[in-house]
Amino acid sequence: MKISEIARILEAKVCYGEDMLDTEIRSACASDMMSDVLAFVKDQALLISGLCNPQVIRTADMMDIKCIALVRGKMPTPEMIEIAKQKGIAILTSEFRMYVACGALYAEGLHPGELRV
Amino acid sequence: MTSLRLEFDVSGNNFASAGTASDEVKKKLKMLGINPVDIRKVAIAMYEGEINMVIHAGGGKAIVDIYEDKIDIILKDNGPGIPDISLALTEGYSTATDTIRDLGFGAGMGLPNMKKYSDEFKIDSKVGEGTTVYMTIYFG
Ligand SMILES: Nc1ncnc2c1ncn2[C@@H]1O[C@H](COP(=O)(O)OP(=O)(O)O)[C@@H](O)[C@H]1O
Ligand SMILES: [Mg+2]
Image 1 (cartoon, each protein chain N blue to C red):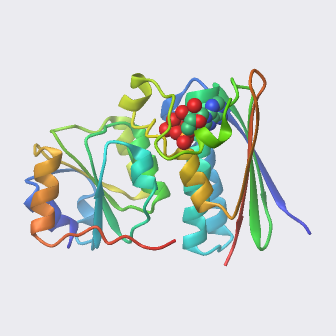
Image 2 (image 1 turned 45 degrees about the horizontal axis):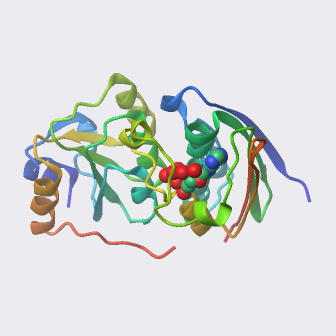
Image 3 (image 1 turned 90 degrees about the horizontal axis):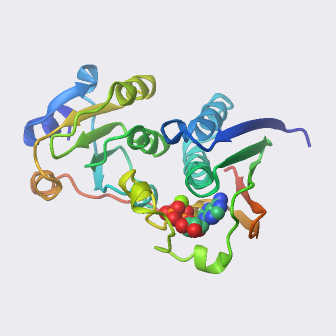
């Protein structure tokens, strides 16, 4: 699923990464706790989170995650956008709540896709 | 065997900048052409360790030695120490405050993640003196 498709399903605004909309995303994970995200390695994943601070971007970067969708209308800070730029990570923001965002993407075929390490 | 040594001061009073040492190591390994799967293991293990030094120990030092076939990571702090290491290693065990949880950490998965992603893992800790974590990850 392309990032543009994810943005459409989540009715999301693209805060950073207009030039990455064609990037293919194969799996997803959702959490407000970063260690939960770090516990399961995924391939070309989307991170869905209600947490809005620079560590969300750092966590994504450590996991080679290329796109973050913030839920509940959270807006990334300038500092978050700056790190996202350096790392080439797209940031979307959606008014949806976590449960709805996950359900919508899952229903359209975006599944967890965990890898063995 | 020759190694490349990197040393970092991890500041204890700047949560926003936590993770910069791990980021530097990640960039260096990428430059050296280490395979992405190993880089990811190193990045996650070291990042969790760096976060722990920031949220539990008021900061510390990271000493990283990169060899051709492995990386040694030492994370050393002068924080409060860990009274019961095997308890601390339990998935879900955390003494983190609500403030830390609101920042996205304190799920009690940090040490288990570090252990999971490293090939060799050891903690030395003394209450009142500090904690040192040793991690080795082999490449390939
Ligand atoms: N460097 C450290 N100094 C002191 N205590 C630590 C340190 N690292 C971990 N701990 C203790 O071990 C517990 C578990 O750590 P961890 O698994 O990383 O979970 P979390 O950081 O989410 O609490 C922490 O809550 C803390 O009590
Ligand atoms: Mg931790």
